[in-house]
Image (cartoon, rainbow, N blue to C red; front, side, top):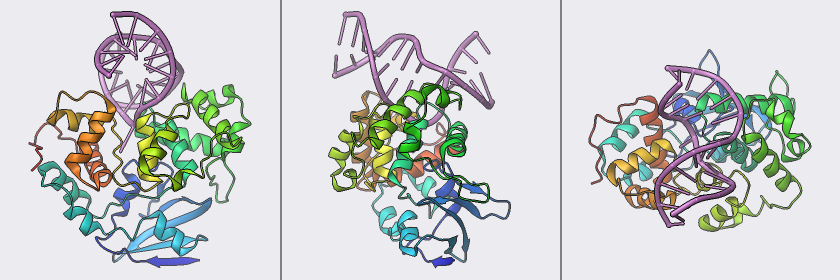
Amino acid sequence: MGHALRPKSGGMHLDATLGCGQVFQWHRLPDGRWQGVISGAPVRVWLERGTLHCDATVPADRLRAYFRLDDDLEEIYGAFPDDALLRQSVSAFRGMRILQQDLWECLLSFLCATNANIPRIRGMIAALCQRYGPDIGDGLHGFPTAGSLAKAEEEDLRSLRLGYRARTILQTARMVSSGQFDLEILPLLDYRTAHARLCTLPGVGPKVADCVCLFSLGWLEAVPVDTWVRRLVQKQEPSLRSYQAMAEFARSWLGPYAGYAQQYLFHYVRTLGDVEAEGCRGG
DNA sequence: CCCCAGGTGTCAG
DNA sequence: CTGACACATGGG
């Protein structure tokens, strides 16, 4: 079953979208296509003349939603502040889109991401999927459900080299699978309420909560302040200390699509480096 | 040996 | 409220 999906505005940069550190389970094949899992089904995607092609048993509307193909990127770029570094970042990755990931997968992914670098996050998630995820054919495994993780012992998770994340992943999986924590309510709440609710989970602080708010719940003003974003903020306002203060500053600096802007900056400074060279001032 | 990585929880001021 | 530190692990 194939789909041909045309982005609404601003095109699609597939390599940046799937390789920018918002999702960790996609694999780039030698022919340039990408293989991954959406809603539990194997998917292959590639670009042809600006159109996104998908081999998948997933409905077209779900694919459009996952890749956020109806985001008007030109309008989003137009709302960005006039900032040298941000201009360079957009120029480098024009067409990069925030994804709309499945909620539990996104939460589990960024529980793994705490104080780890991206290659290691990929390794942890691959190990979790291989050990606890459903076999969906072709040697692929989907994400484990909260229920399947909840039945594990902490030592089993430790053996996957999750480190101290084993405990919080297990506790969170048990709270979700038991119904003690209601994931399904989150999409119905406003940004602040959803963020606060997420922060009640073990291992979930403001940064992980913002990743879920941006990459799954679709709050484009959410700014995950990690070590890279913190450097960018403190370069302009060295006095800012708390997470809340830096996130608020980033929102006022970057505008209503601050989450989008943040992702361009994050990917640019992390991959092309050169954070010190330029003058990045808001304008 | 050091430091860092898409941080969080805890504890002392 | 703030800052310091432990926490597991792998890579540079």
